[in-house]
Length: 290
Image (cartoon, rainbow, N blue to C red):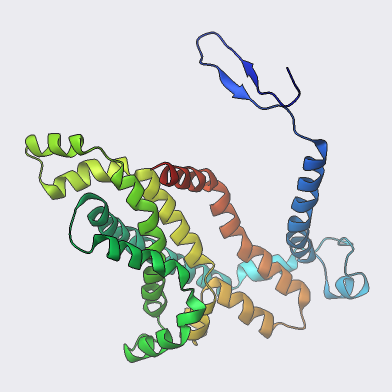
């Protein structure tokens, strides 16, 4: 058996699963270096928040001597950080609810019904993936201003729902299309209505895709910066990414406090993504298989 062959181990009561041999150690070295390069800026920001401005000026790459927690305490005890956390949470939850509910209904129609123009409509939604927000920001700004939604969270939520719909529909259509027609026929024979079939059968069976699209919509909304920058001018309505930029401009001479504010603003997104990483990968895998 060669070194590149697949090793198979058998356990009583379990089916045999292929086990790949260890790869070249150079791969792990390269991966460790890449991970270190990605984590180094984050570590610098977090550690920099525990330093004073004098320490940063004297030794920009050194460790805190001593460790100072006042920068983090000042940010946490102030009302600005928590208000922006609340605004970002409201915008992200509303965007997620709107994108998932509308995307699920549209995907259900495209996946389960045959009608003229279905392929064109699906291609239309797929084409939405090719138009980033930066391309449409100017006409979008004019539309939001005409609707009277400037300086309001609604002016951020509605466009984010629209831009999240293509991804939601593209992911959900394979899940809904993979549901056997026999299940639908059996449900109708038992007296289930179309709406009842949707709530009782379609939604539970497509739950992995729904969770995946919801997580993607939430993260995309939480990290959104360009749209709030154009729509929101009132400090009371700032979301967290926009608040970081505003805080950095306001306290530009206090580098340590800016690093502390930036560190705290990264924590919610990092925790959320870490908790639901497997859900994202599992949902996208299911969409590809479907």
